Amino acid sequence: MAAMGGHDQMTAFEDMARAALGLAGIPPTDSDLAVLGAVAQALEPGMRALDRADLEELPPESALDPSRAPMPDVADGDRS
Picture 1 (cartoon, rainbow, N blue to C red):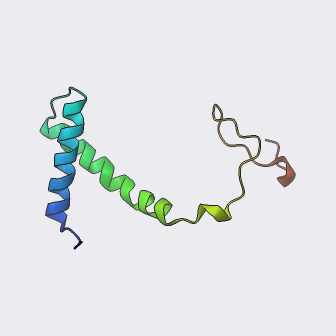
Picture 2: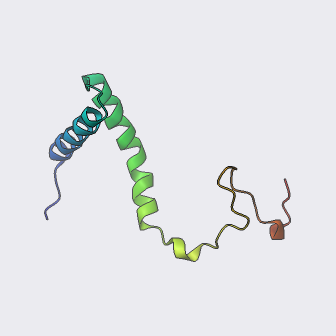
């Protein structure tokens, strides 16, 4: 599949955003679409980097507690 140009990507994103907001019962405004587009552009580089990252090389977090922020390993000597 050929890469889409910037205008085609924005049109596809706008169509998806309109559909998603519509499914949520929110009539999208031009302002809504502009904000969503800006957020998507700001987050895209990080999302692409995360997608390319080999997370298998990272050790699992010990004592995982999803209700709290990640804690450094006690083995590292950092108990703050």
